[in-house]
Length: 194
Length: 298
Image 1 (tube, rainbow over the protein chains, first blue to last red):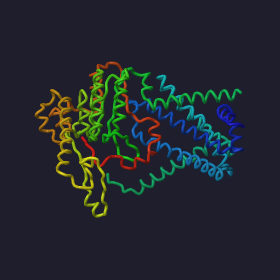
Image 2 (cartoon, helix red, strand yellow):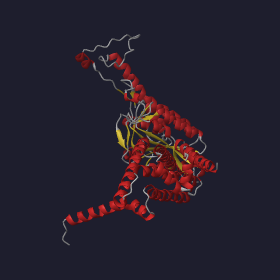
Image 3 (tube, each protein chain N blue to C red):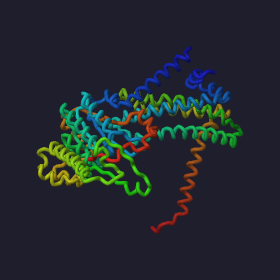
């Protein structure tokens, strides 16, 4: 499957495409696509900030924005690898099925529709219908989320319900951890007389 | 074939939006065409005035070349109806202040009102520039004034003697090494340099008298033009500034002076370009000092 076939497949035929990616694991093209989408969105978002700014050309800390952007690229790769590894590990623990490298490739390609959101928002803002742009951008984000769940399902050979549960599990764990911490802090704090 | 066409069309759309975005970031006025037609141009002057831009490796500096370019843009662009000069500078080299001032005078001749908005500090060379505008607005606690000229040199002879360094000078004339850091300044040299500073000060005074004509008594001005600084409030009472107000008040003032009634847009004319910020920090040569040991400063 060529890169064009893969990109087309992600949009119009995601399930077999993700199955192929999970099986063949084309890691380098995957990471390259992820990088291109990330950098592209960065440029478009910078344009959007300029366009939306009340004062054109005024971007606070403009000097360092690209330094932060560079760090963001590195950090995003780190988060991508961490996400794939963590979800694969959780899948192995709960469902006895793991495929970290396959999942990494699937998640890399799953961000492709996300490249459409900011440009559509940008175009809509130019045409004076920025509200439509926000909706389209939101739809692109939802599309990516759906593809990420499908990536889990296909890469780890799970059922849809299991994939959804696995997808929200890290978030749930963080929320539970925070609630637990709040509870412990509340218990240990001295009570004030009413 | 169909797949290639669909992916190709998507790529064309993405590239088009990317190019548009880069154009907007590089030249923000491209984005204004769909909004109000009148623009209030803002030119920011931040840091020490000089002829060289700052980088990640140097302290902040207001590059006079870049500022002049922005002023010329404001003069040329028909959509820019008024200009606000936002100054946050303690001064800098005399030439940088003078050059910017001259360019502002040219801008004013086109009929576009120029309003100065003072930030934290607008002193010395910063105030010189402010005097080239039609209206000056300061914040109550802005530090301004410092009307005067200064030239400094450091005598390192004692240090050189201790280190065993002796500078050998070959000069074409008696005063070619005037201000040298390796020896004591002679009385005659002191006289020459003092004359330069005094002449420069006279030019500064002339600039203020011209810029604040009818707003401050020339004799009163001479009494206070001894390098001292004032708060914006005191400066307003003395006539060094026209009124007190913040950045947005200055923009409103500019709009009123230009008679802008329609929806207008504010645009920073010397905003940093995309490529400038990308190459920032790669100019390692800036680590080395590029200034002379002594300079005439406002």
